Length: 141
View 1 (cartoon, rainbow, N blue to C red):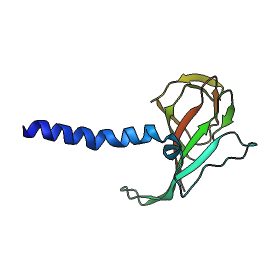
View 2: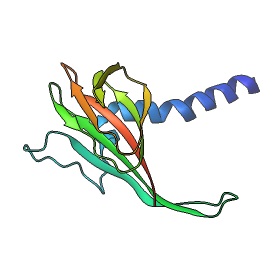
View 3: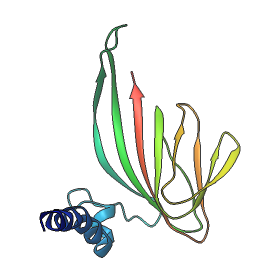
């Protein structure tokens, strides 16, 4: 009986947050304290999730930098450039898109991860599907 109760408890513990996000997609995209930009002239909606300093202490000496985590919502049939200063890690949270990095085009599906080196432009092309991207920009100073 205990294993059954424990399994049910774990299912509720991990399942309820997923269900809650599906019931209120606007809350999953932008938190209340940092609402998305809704200017019609700027199609992508950008929410800053986290911004802070970054510090490493390898054997060669300390390295200082910063990290910026953002969530992007880009409408269908749009093209947008995702600006970044350092190494960019991207997660496609919803939708399907085509990226263009240094002239190379590649299609990505929901759940995909990829990286863009510092100094390389990332252009995102959506088709008939809106997309949600999670980006993390690692800037080493």
